Every structure is written in structure tokens, then in C-alpha cells.
Length: 377
Ligand code: PMP
Image (tube, rainbow, N blue to C red; front, top):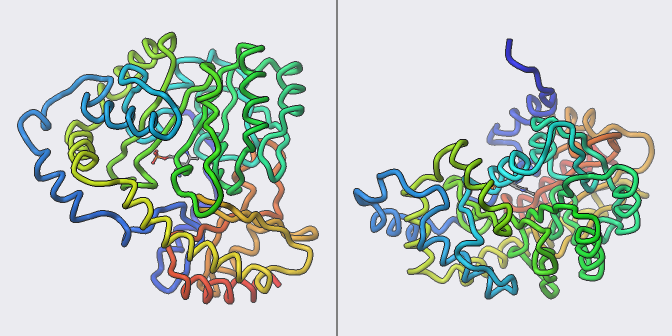
């Protein structure tokens, strides 16, 4: 008999969002019309060779590692080629880290709510998940200190910048406190960072990994390039890297050679930063359209996050409502969102929901929010 894992009933509901008449704020997808298709087509064409159809080293394509190391270094996180392992999406980086670092029954501390598929990954690894209190500025360091004393977690998982699902960003001061705590208590930290380059206002915040060697940094091509290529990277200290490479080898030998080669050609021939500026310009308008519509979409007393970047707005409805039951009425009106309960490791706040603004135009967002207002108000 296979092991049983809990599946989300909401998934079945969300399958209905693919009906073309539905305006979906549910998926966490980048906008496909903004993919750099022609430049990627050229890159794949140039990259396709006997070598790129062959097996390749587990650590990843040497050119791609050098290009990623250079990008991270320029963004304030000094990185050498040997600090990097190319992964099949940053999702795989999470699996590799938990396999490399966690004994069965180990404790993983998380902010709550947090990224659903990370919670699933920790559950599959047999970890015990312990939530740490957060507010609109991210995880509260004093609450983490208390959890570290009480639970002795082996690992802390954070999406410090433009978090999924809340859109929140951990302040620089709190990052420094959390990095210091990790060092004092030999705590490993995963900084999961697929969103920080999608910034629409304000100044970049230094990465946690730039503050401590206890931080393993996971980055991704998915939100700035194309998620279908399944390309991510993990920056880790040498002491852990050896084990991570063995785990990666046992998992899938290496990430797709042709996809890595194409990404390397693409990064050499194109200005990714320029492409990201175009994507950010479009997402900024979509974010603004959603934020502008929220006061007339939600009932009085509701609260929502006002993210500086990323893909998500997090809404808390007033009173004793269950967002999952509202989803059924929303789908009847051809609009969709994700009920927030799934993002909680322990006691869910059922009055919450996640709205993604990336895949709809401002006009469609306005129309979708009008439909949603009929359900929520
Ligand atoms: N981490 C977070 C916080 C995410 O939101 C996502 C994607 N939704 C991932 C990791 C996985 O991204 P990738 O495509 O790089 O595996």
C-alpha cells in the first residue's frame, strides 16, 4: 500500500478555474504573455547540440553557475561558482535541503501562513512543523527566540521577501536579528527567494544569506524567466554542499542539460534585468488595479496586505467566515481565489484568502474584483 498524504479538497474546486470565463486570482503563475519567447527560442536553438543532449555534472552547467553567481554577487550576495548547485526549480532545492539536513522527527520552524508546497515537503520528510508568530513586517524575532529555546528546531524556513501567500517582506533589522539567532543556536535557515526581483516600489532589502553562513539561499528562474524550464539554484556553504550534491545525484542525477544550456545562452545574449523591468512595469499596474479595487470589494473591517512586490495580496475578512465556502459562490460568479487555510501548518485562520494579481490585465482585475465584491460584501 502506498503511504497516504492529505490532499487538499480545494484543489478539486480550483480545477474549475480553468474554465475560460473564470477570472482567476487563484494561481501563483507568472503571466505567459510576458515570457521572452523569441529570445528563448533563439537560445534553445543555439544551445541544442550533442553535448546538451548528453548527461552532465550533478552540480550543474558551468556557464550557468558562473552567470548566476555573477548575478547574485551584483545583487549584494557575494557568490562563487562552487557555492552553487543548479536545481530543478527551487522546489527541488527545498527537498534536497531537508533530505541533507533533517533527521526523521526533526523540528522545522516556519512563519505562518507560509508557502503550501514547502509545508508539504517538510511533511513528506517526516518533520514536525512549528509555527512562529509573524506580523505585517514578517517573522517576529522574539517569537523565534522563544520557539528556538522551547523546540530546538534544526531548520527555519522563510520567504523573507514578498512572501507567498502574504506578500510581506521581513525588515532588514529583523533579518539581522534572525541571522544572529541562527548563528548562536546552530540553526540552519532556508531563505526561499523566488520573488525579490519583482519589486514595484521601495529599495531592495539585503538578503538573509548575506548576513550569515547558516543561511541556504534558494533562487529561481521561474518568476523572472519561465517556470516550465524548471531551473533554480541553491547557494550553500561548502560544509553542506558535499552532502547536497550526493542527495541531488540520488534524486535525478542532474537538472536537464538542454534547459540549463539554453538558460546560459539566454543570459549571455540578453539583458535579463531589462526584461525584469518590463515584467515589473506590467505587474505594478496589475498590483495597483487590485489594491485600488479592494476597498469596494471586501466588507468593512477587512484587512489586506499592500505588497511592494511579488505576486500576492493577502486578505483577512472580518467575523466568523470560512473563505473555502465563499469560493463555491465565487466560482458560480466566474471568479476565483485561494482560501487561506491551506497555508497554515497548524491552526488555520479560515477567514483569510490569497489573491494573485499577475495573470490578469488591469481591466480584467477590475471586473474580477466587481464579481468578488458580490460574494464577499
Ligand atoms: N518557493 C515559493 C515561495 C514559491 O512561491 C514557489 C512557486 N510558487 C516555489 C518556491 C517553487 O518555485 P520553482 O518553480 O522554482 O520550483
